[in-house]
Amino acid sequence: MFDKLKKLFVVEDGSAASSSPTSSGVESMPSTENVSGPSVSKTPEMTIEVNAAEGTPDQKFIDILLKSVEKNNMDGFDYLEYKQSLQSLANMAMDDATRYNSALAMAKTMGASKETILSSAGHYLGILKQEEEKFKAALVGQKSMVEQNQTVGISNLEKSIVQKQQQVESLLKQIEEDKARLEQMKNEISEAASKIQATANNFMSAYNLVVGQIVEDVDNIKNFAK
Image 1 (cartoon, rainbow, N blue to C red):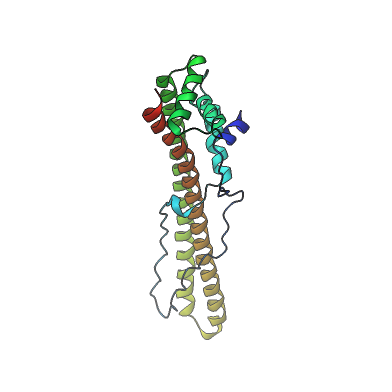
Image 2: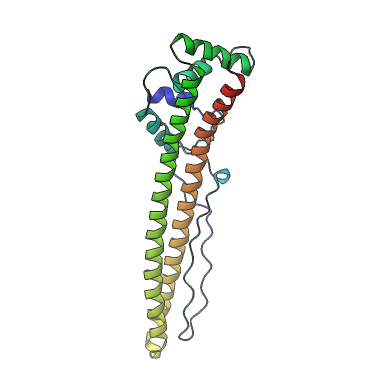
C-alpha cells in the first residue's frame, strides 16, 4: 500500500531531496569584539522562520507523511482509491472535468459517492495536520535544547575570559585559546540553527506538496465531479 501511495503523490520534477540537508555554504556567526574589560558580548539569538518556498520536498518527510496516511487508511473505496483512478486516467486525452467525472463514475460502481470521497479527503488532511503539529512541537524542542546549550556554554566561557584578562601576563595565552573556543562554539550554534531551519523548510515544502495535491483534488471534485 505504501508504494502505491508514493506513486500517487510522485514528485515529477525530481525536486524531492533524498538526503538530509547539509551545512555547506552556511555563513558563520560574526566574531565577537575583543573583551578588554568586565563587559560581556551579547548571546546570539536563534530565530527560526519557516518558509516552504526556500526548502525542497525532502523524500524522508514525504515518506513520513504518506506512512501516516497509510496507517489511517479508511476502509472501502475512498479518496485514495479515487486518486488512483484519476492517475490511471491521467494519460488519456480528456480535460479535467471529464477525467474527474470518469473517476467518480468508477467510484460509484464501487459503492462510493462524491460526498464520501470528499469526506475521506478531509480525513486525510486532518491526519496530515496532526503530523505538522507533531513536527512543530519537535522543532520547538530542538530549538530549546540548542538555546539552552548556547546560553550556558557561551556565558561560562565569556565569564572565564573576563576573569582571566584580569590576571597576570602569563595567562594571556590561555585567554586567546578560550577566545578561539568561544568562536568555535558560536559557529557550531549558527550551523545548528541553519540545519534546523533547513529541516523545517524541507518539512513544510513536503507538507505543502502532499496537502496541495489533496486540496487541488478536493477543489476539482467540487467543481467538476457530478
